[in-house]
Length: 509
Ligand SMILES: Cc1cc2nc3c(=O)[nH]c(=O)nc-3n(C[C@H](O)[C@H](O)[C@H](O)COP(=O)(O)OP(=O)(O)OC[C@H]3O[C@@H](n4cnc5c(N)ncnc54)[C@H](O)[C@@H]3O)c2cc1C
Image: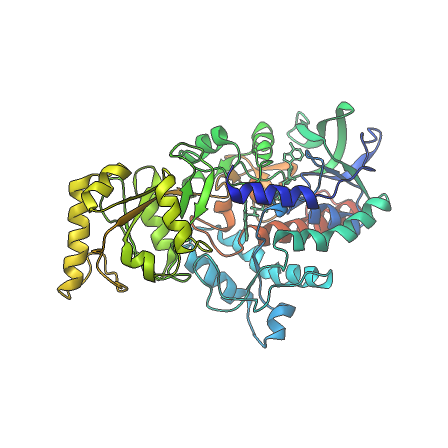
């Protein structure tokens, strides 16, 4: 386990609120208006807003604690017309937010789901603010680790994802105490109960009390993605899960439940990788040992990036980190190596944030992902790269620079030739935190079959609909947590209205 994960796990464990008073079994005689599967980022607001709207709600959570990925997520969210923007005198619109999202992901996200997100994201953030959510100093910003927006509408809570959870909990606990939400923790949804005509009529749960059939008017799958389940991830994306960085409960249960009821899974082809993960070993799934963002908006590069053939493949200082991500994606096994020399070690900002020169130099003595040598050929041999090709690559880079010629990939920032031994390499892996494949839904968040037919009474929200739906084939600022909470909020409220009015069809969201 990487240092990062161990630290975060311990932090999460220490902060994990448990629900000892939660029901061990649901009352099987009760018919719930809404059953929510998964008490995480999307499921909590869905259960909460359904209960606040007057619905009888059952919330089923597999783990002992509510919160899901919020325990690990940085929880960066984006929206226009927020109180945080007002503080800074920023005027912004959902349309500008929409245009920015679609520019960043090159139009690969679902436009209707993007529109649904941006139209309601401001209300989501303002609701969180009303419930104690506070942002980091200087936020909102235009961007952090991904390609930036054109306006400052992106923020992180002072306590990352936990700031969001903290904003939910008092209202949620009040609804549980009032009996408006029945909560089953340590209980998994094991099966959907489906009538012969295709309608979903309830859920079979498996928990301390054994298996129970529970009847419900509407069932919402909010059980998260599958990026902690290497086998399922590879099957749905056609790409191995190179690194395990998702929250461990992201096992894909919700995708399988949706499939079992006739739902379609789409979006695996939108898989996009992040660059710069230094693995604990070249095996997959690996663990993150360290992380170099390789994002010129964070640090201008001194190093060059090469692939396993020892060849450069991308403009390392490209203004769009998405461009660099795409470059990594096109390399065999998404592997890449940073190559640099003693001058960079002495003069550049740390390639791995918070690592000083001594730490970097030390890892090069002891760590199998870090190599150093007095010549480029010797470095290549140690790192397992083609020595002739790497020598040619470095010579070409140096020659173009010293002769004042344009770089092969159009790179502009070339602080110095790689000419001062010792030379260094760091092995890196393309990776993802999330799964891109998910249950196909319409803008009413109903689960759809391959033919596009809604499965009556079945809905899906959160990462179970796939990162590809709202983030596209890219990492679009906040376009997972923001839609997860927003869809939870509006679907919960809408299902409550529906339950109260007894309407059989969903009102338009
Ligand atoms: C480290 C990290 C950082 C991230 N940072 C950001 C960010 O800054 N901004 C952003 O937009 N996105 C970010 N993401 C992604 C984002 O956090 C997730 O996509 C989002 O939180 C998922 O929400 P969810 O409700 O779908 O799943 P979760 O929050 O994981 O909730 C799912 C819940 O369902 C439960 N469950 C699973 N199976 C069952 C079952 N069978 N029965 C009952 N319950 C079940 C799980 O235990 C879990 O509690 C990040 C992800 C990670 C891992």
